[in-house]
Length: 493
Ligand code: ATP
Ligand code: MG
Image 1: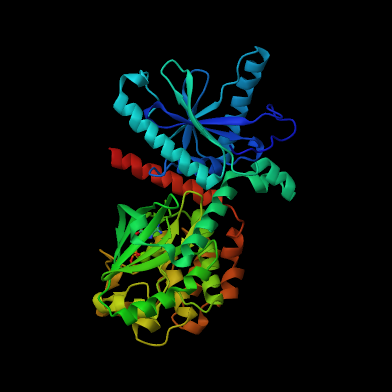
Image 2: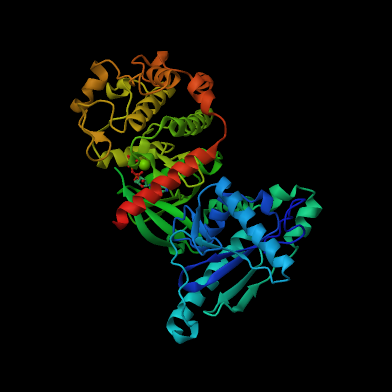
């Protein structure tokens, strides 16, 4: 199990906090945490994400003394849950009772029903197989000890199996390295490490079709289809973009070599790239999966959330530009978010050959293109800055900023329809509805003359970006979680 040290003065000094994650069918996975004070809401969601890789869990619940379910959606609410739990632990200690684990219910899971688990052999076996698989995945990803207990209907805990600690107890490793308990032991760090390891393994050209199980379709674009997929060898969920391309072997090789630079991209504002491969006449590009999807499907985004998103997008673009990469396709559908509150850019044009090959099949002009690009003039960083401005204007208004342009499906349009972007004055955000720095930021980015638009350092130093450059990912995280829950509720109606 993952051992973290409990902070001084905690109600459970010296003792581990056991969080029992109740999964469907009444089974449960126990997770032992030794440093509850450092535990973040996000860490719990990460572990739930490993336990239930198919679900997008944005919240979880616990039961109060009356058996009412209380929802936890933030660090604050988690603190309240922990202090409630510690008070029950103290009572149990005073009364000499056995300390009960903290039971949590991932939001989508049904509460465990009262049933005799032996009565249904089929369900039991299925459940056991699934949970054993889950535990294996958690074990491999977190490198922690997992004990699997099964809770029977009369609340007896039956231990089904236990996966051992890897060689060198995590506690010992933390102590030996001299690193702080918080940075060594929090699950999010373990996950980060595993993600980096995965990237390393996959970057060695080991990504192939046989290891990928395609699941849901995440969306269709102008070139291909994006799938949510399961990578068998790493146990990780990926996003795989599959693009049909009828090209020669020579061009395929050229594309693969142009994509090499993606392995070197290392920024928290750029989507993680795991590998690419050709099978017959299609290329598959495997990237990090973002459970919040792209920004084009979110309606009007409030300014305080959009501000934090803008900071991430500006940092992502600045990073690409520092590598001499122009994005060339900045638009809301290429800005991805997740329930951790991270914002990442995807689909930037590193491979000219790939961009050209797709363009041969799909005709049309991108509505987010800068006026100079629509007119067929030279393209530079300034053109990305225009696309940034028009994208954020759309996200703020909840509609495309040029009312005469109806963007029904996708972003490609006949060139004539986009002529107004070249001919007319740029639209401006209504001052009464948005802050002065935000209105100014958009106005600067959408200057018709490319040279009048802000340079990378001016973007980072703009008061709108400076104001929201506070590292507060929780604002975006809570907003993404709320939107996903709303969407789910609407879908259920
Ligand atoms: P274009 O082909 O011009 O880039 P697009 O961005 O709308 O258009 P795709 O890039 O094919 O189309 O993506 C389709 C959809 O798949 C996106 O809108 C997004 O919702 C989803 N998607 C893409 N990549 C990911 C990812 N890494 N994680 C989660 N969802 C993704
Ligand atoms: Mg895209």
